[in-house]
Structures are given as C-alpha cells and as structure tokens.
Image (tube, rainbow, N blue to C red; front, side, top):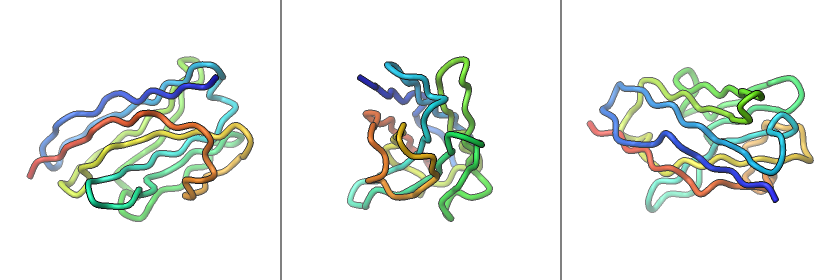
Length: 125
C-alpha cells in the first residue's frame, strides 16, 4: 500500500517562497515518476510539474516555468516542490502524485496511480 503525504503549505505574501514536500511510504520513491498538481476553488486541476523516474527529467507547466523547481531526495524518500516568486494566482491546494509503472513527466493526471491528500498554499497580495 503506497501512501503519499504532502507538507509545507501555508500562507505567504506575493513574491515569497514556499517549499512543499511529498513523502512516500510503502514503496521507494526512487522507483516512481512524480507529478505535482494544483486545484483552486472553481477551477480544474492544473498540472504544475513532474520528474521522471529514470533520469530526473523535469517538465513544468507554463504558468510556473522558471519559478518552481522539483527535486527528489531518495535517501529521505521525498520529492520537493520549491516555489519562488509566488503570485496570488498560485493559491490552490497542491497535490503530489506518483506512478511506479511509467517513466514519465506527463501532465495527464490519469497517468498517475497514487495521490496525496493535498496541502493548501495561499498567496496574499
């Protein structure tokens, strides 16, 4: 049984930074591709970025490119999302997701098999 738990969300002023973490239990994260998604009230779920399993390829959504960075720490079995230059429109619940069967950076949410419960990020103007 794989479980993902996000942490690190909170309230930050525009221009600030936050670092989200996604911890996995039940299976080593090093064997998974991991994606980050977000969903604001009334909006559809949006792809933020992903990191592949094999070679650490990263792929980011256009709205966060250049501001957000995904990294993994296999020793701690975590994947992090460093968010800089935050904007009010970044306010959302952020979710991590993983797949152990595909080596991918796909933005398609359906390609990920496991999801965390989400962590709230609020950016004030």
